[in-house]
Image 1: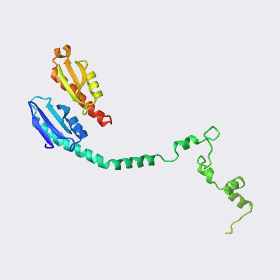
Image 2 (image 1 turned 90 degrees about the horizontal axis):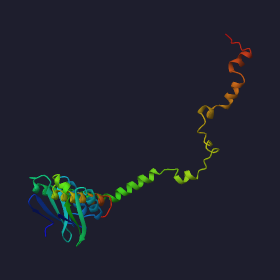
Image 3 (image 1 turned 90 degrees about the vertical axis):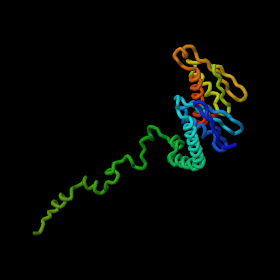
Length: 163
Length: 80
């Protein structure tokens, strides 16, 4: 028996496929594409053979063209399925890595373990909440401003400039 | 009355049930199982035929709907 055969009826076409060559999912995919233009019926035509009957919804449609188009679509679907199968492990690996990377520190468990209360909520051990001026101000300068300005000290010592 | 036969390995039983429910306003359906196939006997309601709905078209649309749901279920991981 050949891998594929088709029979033209009155306004309909019947195509048979070997499930070993064209998996059921590929046949489903091709049938789904035709569901708006044709009445599609699937049946078993024997062991590991699936029979697809296409009947055009519009009278006078070229059913032979539908048969050819269906076979092309089926080939495309089968090829797509094969690519998906071949790349399945790669896609799973990339997805797992992406999910792993997204779960950066801190984790939920760490957040739940944190003691965040009214007293500890505003603790700032790293000094993040402190302003830059406050954090890096020069201690000596700050003290000097409290005492005397530099110019005032010079004039007080009677500093006359030699001309 | 039109008899539709859906092979159990190719069609989802729940999809057929759902299709029958969807078209319940237009047709009455009798469901049974016979030799590895779901058998649906479809009879168009008088209200539907009086509106010009053909029983054959109605049955074919019901079968298409059942196939569509079967494929959608198979794609989403459900068994066909």
